[in-house]
Amino acid sequence: MGTIKFTISHKRKDCIGCGHCALVAPHTWTMNHEDGLSDLKNACAKGDDYMVADADIDVRKDNELAESSCPVNIIRLGK
Ligand code: SF4
Image (cartoon, rainbow, N blue to C red; front, side):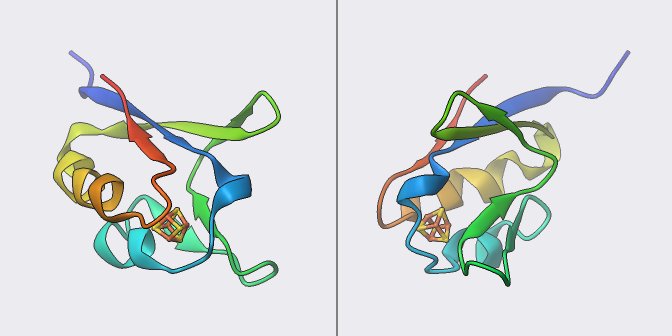
């Protein structure tokens, strides 16, 4: 049986680079030193505006915190 996963999406173009997601969920997020915005690790582009990734259930709680505390509300968790 494989590890349970859930999806995360990031509307990166609206990120303001506050760094909160990388602070509370460092296994999933990192700050990009080129443009100062956050990167969702192992993500693929979905359309022009979104990056999406599958993450292990172990990091769900941390990412719920990232989702609820992102000041511009651009992190969304799926099932
Ligand atoms: S918490 Fe939101 S605005 Fe702040 S760096 Fe992460 S995605 Fe960008």
